[in-house]
Every structure is written in C-alpha cells, then in structure tokens.
Length: 298
Image 1 (cartoon, rainbow, N blue to C red):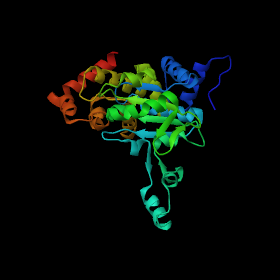
Image 2: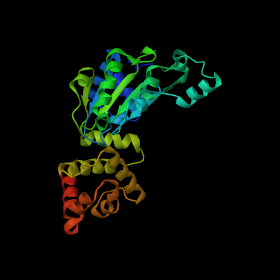
Image 3: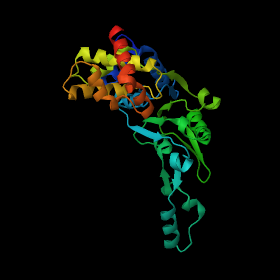
Image 4: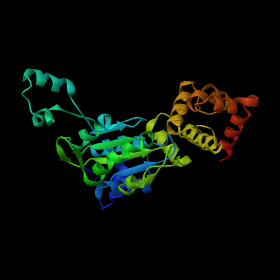
C-alpha cells in the first residue's frame, strides 16, 4: 500500500501520510521520499543528530503499512551481524545425527541459514518492508562495500548458496550523522535528502502533533528557545526530542510559560553535557537568560 491523493498530488499524499504518523515534513523531504518510492531507489538521509532522520523511516513504515526492519550500525559491525550467519550448532547436530554422512550442499543449505536484518528484509515473505540502515557512519567502510550489491541489484551473494534475489525489494532508508565521509559508490546508488533543524514554525507544529495538550503559546516559546540555543553553538545542540522533553517537563512542573526558573529546573531535558550545562548556568545563568531573551524577541 502506498499513499494516494485525489487530484494527482503524490507529494501531498506523502505529506498527509507522514503527518498522520506524527511526522511533520516539508515539501522537499516529501518529494525525496516520493521519488525514492517510485523510481525506486534507496534514500540516504543526512543531518545533525536529533532532527528526525530515524523517525522518518518509522513514520514511512506506518504510512505505507509495511513492517520496519532496522539495522543499527556500530563500529565493528560485520556481515554475520548484518547479513547472515550459519547456524553452527544445528549443523554440528546434523553431522552427529547423520554420523558424518552429510554432504556440504545439504550442510550449507538455506535451512541452516540465519537471517540477519539485511537478508531478512530482502527475503521477507510480507515484503516489501521498510529497511532502516541507521547511523551507517558509525560502521566501518566494509559494511558499505557489503551493501553495494544489495542496493544496486536487489540481491546478495552467499558463497555456499550463490545469488539470492529479493522477493520484493525493500524501501531502504539510510541515515548518517556525518561523523565520517561515506563512499562515492554508496552515494551514487541512493537518492539524497538533508534534514536540518526545523524552523520555529515547523518545530511548533511538531510539538502540537506529539503533545496535543501543549498550548500553542508554550509550543512557540519552546521552539523559539531551541532556535536560540542552536545559534549558541553548544557542544551538543538540542534536537527535536529535547524540545519535546522540555515542553512535557514544563507541563509536569505546572507551567504553561517558559521563564528562567522553569528552564533551569528542566535543564536536563535539553542539555546533554557538563560543558554545555556549565556554560548556560555560569554567571547566574547569564547565557540561559540571553537565550530566553532572544527567544522572546524572535
């Protein structure tokens, strides 16, 4: 199932579908998603941490009514964790039961193959699924090489079995925080989208979508404060998740308005390092007061 729109507006349908899943996107991102679905091509999404790259794949899964398969990348991730692994205990058991009378073709058949996220998505019976390859920049370059055949040809090659083609090519979303440069070969196989920190208006809309009990006034105050803090070039600028946490914390503290006392009490929702905390609270909170003043003026 894919989003449909009366009047032939497929990008509008994507926007509406994502909004229905609680994801507030712009027309440029919705267009990239539409093209990725229809061409079809993997979508590489880059941007600062905390802007909603991972949430896009989750919302797309909900919009399409398709299962989400996620590969969380990390340093040292290898093919046995990402693609497949042989079930060695069952193979040894089969050898013992057959008293050694098992040939390699049977021992290395699909019944002994353990599907990891990439292969699981490629061979999914309920496909096409949405495959999220999250934070690929955290993984080693070897993983990118592993992905080229899958992304470019919709297949993987397993030496003992040969080439396995996708039953239904998954909708692939790859995210990166740009902690390292990705290869040109990977980029060429993907469409590209950049998600920046949201505007005040969009962040207010995101807060309204996720926290419907938040007043428009408080949502706007939080969004303006986030923009002011991001201009301060903190070590870890607050993302959308931090904005949601601050708005929820203000409500829990019984306030429908942001002032220095409320933000100081809830500072742990938006500040994630000792250096940033010290910077904002130094000199009786002068930097925090400045950010609040900028938020009121904007």
